[in-house]
Image (cartoon, rainbow, N blue to C red; front, side, top):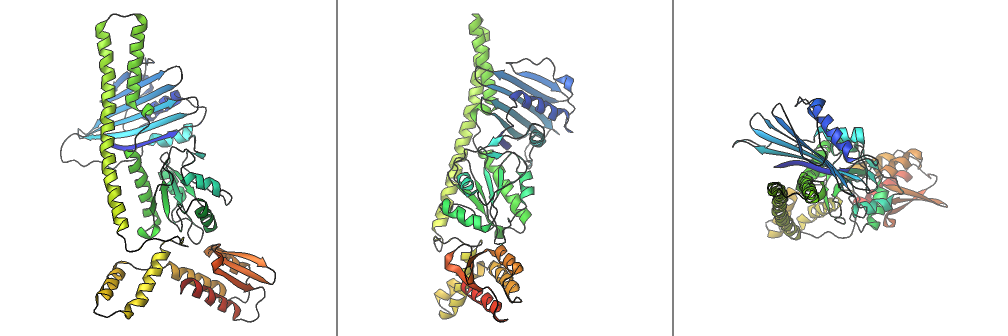
Length: 469
């Protein structure tokens, strides 16, 4: 069973041979093995080299043709006579880049055992540290997040719409109402290194500009979305309110990406099966060129080639079955979505669950208008019993009052506090305009100099009434 998989480009200027050398170094330094450099002697290019040591087996291949080059290492061993582990590392070098594929498989050797939890192999960290990640759709493959600038709305639009031809998925962390992401982006980038790019937007202002340019396909209000390569805006969106802590949210995102990569179809030219096929083809061409009449040699080569193709067919059939199950799941989810209570309109929420908060508030205020023992009242009570307000409205309202109520005029401190909530200020001659989340419908006039102590308090009341009442 495939437990873990990924593919990513490495730093420009490196070769597939560099990957093979690092794979050997990974084994030699592993605490789970006793391999030494002298165990890998007498390697020959163009064939499968097999090395056995201490109950473990390593196979290596290094082959090239007129255009491309490949290197690969396959490590297999048995853990306590219970689990059979296989790790495959394959590098495919073209004129443009070197793509590396890493897969970890596990087979249970007796019934009743549980499949272990998959973990990212240490060689991924080694590869990023010692070789370096390559450029993937304009983003560097690394263990650090990419922080967008306010001027990069166009680049962000291309990323989430799948127009940057990136190989790895994009984890997009949107800004909350205070401008900060809902997760620890640095830690998430370390967890997802070699598996996905972590991209962080700079502010809520940026989010609104991105919404206009991406036809509102962006995550917003602290939500974290995963955009899949080449799927034009298709995403999985996770809301902070659905998780107990930022760490739980980040873990859910990392698990989602890991499961998706395991279920994704690998690049055919970057698999161990393809390496075996290349070796068989090269051997066959060598026999033909030499004019060999040795039938047994031909049969042996053909058998190897057929075995490699059969393995690829078996994996393809497994992928077809997985896709059928995934299609059924998506269809069921779509049916569930269509069966929802209300449809979402075109208004973008200023924070996650804002629309739900408003609907809950409306139901709470209206339920007393219905007959106490009637059907309508029962339905409303049932909806309210399983839907509770997020509490974010109260937090924002408290921030507004805390900033303005004690003040006599709009100073630097008050401006900064309101800007963190989502206000933008413009100077219009005699007055200052405070615009909430760049939406002109929610514009408030602020006197440049306070006429009395009630001015800022009245402004706070006006803002809260228009936004939350």
